[in-house]
Image (cartoon, rainbow, N blue to C red; front, side, top):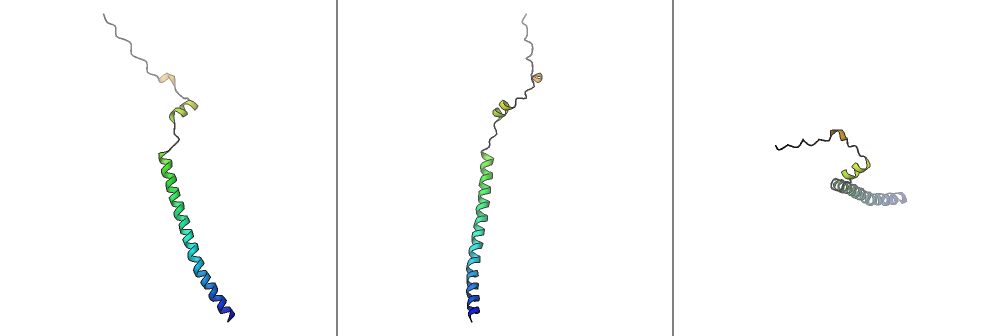
Length: 76
C-alpha cells in the first residue's frame, strides 16, 4: 500500500513538472527566434560600411586612368 501511494504521488509530480518544463522550453525557443529576427533587422539597417574610412585606410587609386581634360579651343 505504501508503494501505490508513492507511485501516485510520483505520477502527480510528473504530470505537473513536464508541462511546466515544456512551456518554459517553448518560451525560450520563441524568445530566441524573436531575438534573432530583431538582430538581423537591426544589422540590415544599421551597418558599419563607410567608403571614406575604407579609402583612408586602404588607398588604391590608380592615377594612370584619370581622364585628361580636352585641349582648349583657340579663337581666331
